[in-house]
Length: 117
Image (cartoon, rainbow, N blue to C red; front, side, top):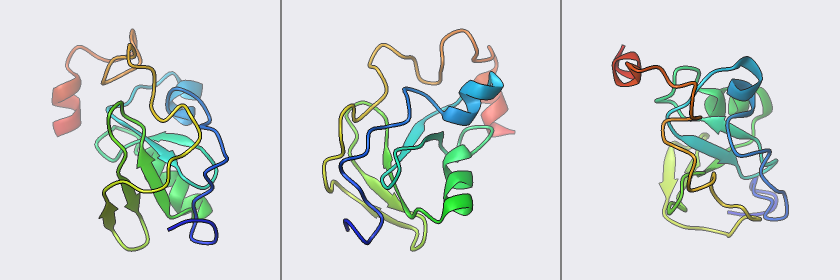
């Protein structure tokens, strides 16, 4: 599950939040980190689904949860979940004081209703 398989343990994350949501002033539910290039994107429960969009654009198959206390991987090519795996370069999650959903100040009051829509 490493090297030529699409995981580079030496690449740091692109930031503490979804790169595209940050640029557009959006918000996310949970975050995923590309295990190949470090891109941090929002999960498929988020309004914009940027992590999946990153996979579609790049073909990078593996993401790891970028949530505190989680270390699972998802393979977009096979739709498989892997519990644990190679340790990526720190930090391995967004800051613990960053709220979920996030970021602070941009999450709508009715965020749960928005996600169900």
